[in-house]
Length: 291
Ligand code: PAF
Image (cartoon, rainbow, N blue to C red):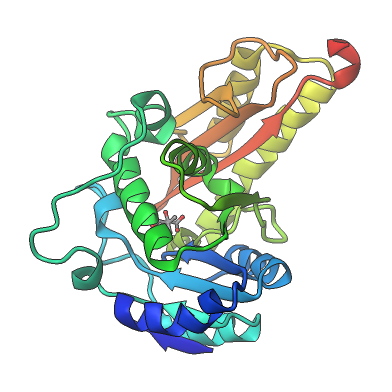
């Protein structure tokens, strides 16, 4: 596996693959790999001739209240893990490479998708997603992958990136793969490294509450208010005060009050210790009822 830092090195490294018409897959990451990242890389390895992984802790998606410097980083360990799953090229640019002096552009998806849930101005705000779409557009343009892989844990991010790619005609297929969980049910995230043992134990309530909601739907619950209230109550019982618990259409993120046969995203964000955790499930009214 080769590691490159600059766009010129990246382009030179990919030139032979491009000439040969090889299928290039990209896994965009902020590093500090866990099994969720590795599952995206393994899938890319299965699907593509050349697998590129980018590692860049993108400053423009961090808000003023978020500590960019404290975000966990370990490029040496990342290199070993990526090589172990057969990645061909690790691209780890620095901030100057991605945002040189005078950088003055941004890619923005409509507020209907980016100013809700995490993008609500009272929460991380739409500037978070502007940062995400700007960097992902730059990664797409630099790597020019045929396929790019993202995790379902960041469900809103996936919806926003899919829309950006569609609206702006990026010639890339966006693949969104299932959330990978620890044995205790906690959705894997680099931010889990902020949790101590007690907080990790408390964090298990999030996936348990989401499972309860899934079971409630299987048992006939159709009101999304009932589902989100039940999740919030279960979290409070476990000592977690959720930032939000919301049910929205999984495709366009519009609010949904009753299950209606379309997939509904039930999303949670909650602080646990120093970590702000997000998780979600997608529920659908059973098909037998919608016929
Ligand atoms: O999901 C992430 O790790 C980041 O938001 C991404 C997509 C790599 C953009 O910085």
